[in-house]
Length: 174
Ligand code: ZN
Image (tube, rainbow, N blue to C red; front, side, top):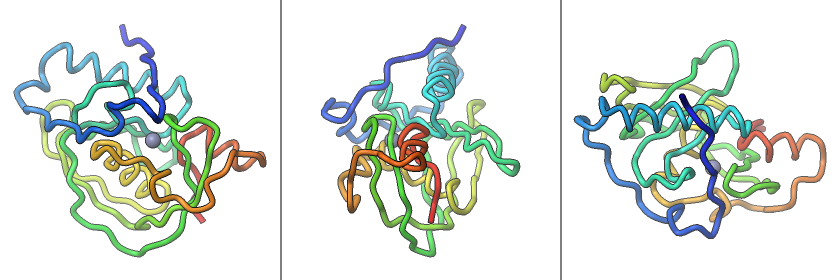
């Protein structure tokens, strides 16, 4: 049974480590599969649209995401690599590891990422807007980077819209 893991907060050293590459042989391990299930459970419970393994104190290169729109499905990406990034835009962002804050950050509006799925098969995800933002945000986590490092106008979420962004951890692109 999947269970909800604790989401660690900014200041915890694991969030600042460069996460280790996953050995593809490890993917079939029941403990690794459990980690994936737990990460989905934790993300949905938060609720959030993405969660990287370092956020549950596991310094490995994988993340889960589900932006819950009509076009995209829930995904787990292991050992992700950005294949394409274009069209810089400014987006408002939040993070489950920096609770209650939002800020503006420059991201790419169109991104493609390759990696492995939970069966160890090659996958490629490509998208725009929130989908692209989420991919970049989660990959930053795997490199020990938090959006607050380069966000402008970092502030406590106050308006209803800002609180929605802070709570969901990354919503809404402008
Ligand atoms: Zn985050």
